[in-house]
Length: 425
Image 1: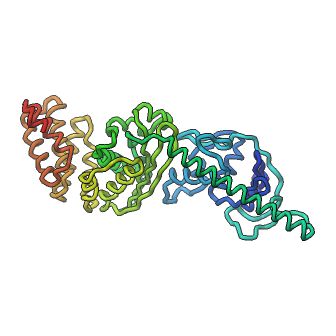
Image 2 (image 1 turned 90 degrees about the vertical axis):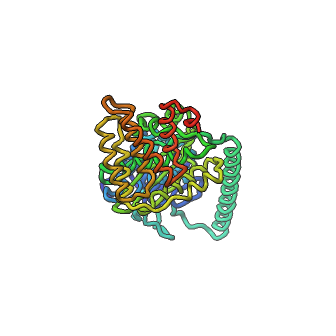
Image 3 (image 1 turned 180 degrees about the horizontal axis):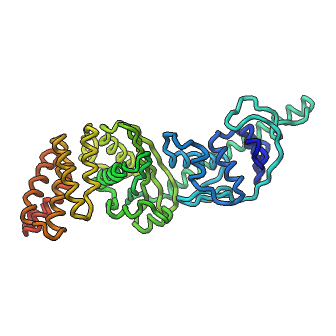
């Protein structure tokens, strides 16, 4: 608390009392310390007096602008720890209401209590300074012993109840939750300081969708369908209902020079329950193995059945030079529904092949670009571009026989030539 703050350092709500100077949270005579960041979030929510506190306000409170951290995951973690301290489940909150993608609101009245201790928030010691929560009149030895014995028994009972509740809830959730058979990967957010790195976030989104789509046991929504939710104005459960999926993957990409940080989390569509999250820090040259590792983690978490061949495709990723992958991603980003965009993408893909002739996805990009020119845009000659599509798709398959996009492009060309059996194969 600062000297100019209009709020005392101690507050009461429900059965809880919190001292922001010592960082102690008390309920029914039991005191527990709260970590600095969740404590700061709690103070901000209480001071808002029932109004919505945005996620951006929390971010600005916890981290300065130049901090290199995944703010979205950090805010989620701080709120989650605060909920744990308050025993406040996100699906049935008593204290903290979540407004998806917007922020949080404290639900019950707050009473502020004067407190004159001077220990700053975040500097808890093993022996905190006296405060309204910790001071008490001296008592005879027998009385003190009896009181301490009651506290020990009380703590044991509370701990036993908490363990029983957690075990029961975990078992019931495990039984009640249906298997996830379908999911959508929402556009990853670009958290880099440079807005021009948007191509990297979009490329990562498309790559993860591609990796997950290779799993036969999992239905994955296409990249085109999810792009309209780049900056959604609706809740995650509503997005899941719109797309008809059981779960959503959301996350972010942050680049700092040659370093890359990717975060992802899984959310159940029906309940908005965040049940898994992970952060990956890699060099840009290891981005392909990062994509494979992330896809494998998601598949394991949703308990999708992965065949031996699918597992091999995950582990075949090899390092790629940063300049090669950047050129490729810029090509994918430029491959839009405009003729100029497609022509620009061809330049990037040709540059990629020149830098690394063994990078198979670049040949797929070239085949796809010439397919677009030959079938979508008036003035382009399908007859002239068709051999290029076939040639580049076959080059891609020589390098990687399991590239599904290349097989699809060849099938489309054969179908246009009425070669039904070959196209089907």
